[in-house]
Image (cartoon, helix red, strand yellow):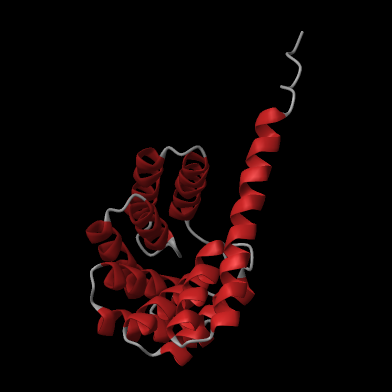
Length: 196
């Protein structure tokens, strides 16, 4: 499908925004994504990109607006729903969060943030069996992240499943130790030679 000249400019701004984000220059990245949205407001994922950058910098009101704008462009954008659910959870709106997170997970079953947040909200509500199922899915999606293991350990402990809880807490410690060891080995390595 061919796109008009606005597509190229929007795509260029988005690529520039992604590069700036990779350099931890978030405000400049936001400006690039906003420029893309100005050129082509219907561009796929432009509003999600802005929303994600705002979310990442904890500017949740702005992020929420952009995720909602994304859903106006693409009502089936499960990631936008998941991040809206995350924001609702952070705003201590558990019922709203559950609705958004369940909808996101139902649309696309590989969104880790949806499952970790579902597990957190369900645990807070005392629905530990459902929380454990969600958290186990989060672990399946990325077993190298300690946060899901930690929440899973706490849910098991709340249910009196001591052995399962201890196993997950041990995994958290292992992942943290591996991360510390990796950082230490990178710091201890000889610096690269200087160009001559």
